[in-house]
Image (tube, rainbow, N blue to C red; front, side, top):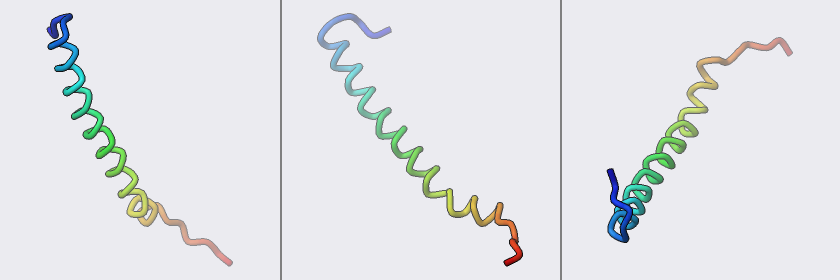
Length: 47
């Protein structure tokens, strides 16, 4: 458990900082995969 002190608040800020990078990287990875998912689900249309 994180203590309710200034050191605990600093520790929580550091943990939150790194978790935000991980979360943003995950979103970037999902967005990177969208074109490949689109090619997998492509449907031939008659024009």
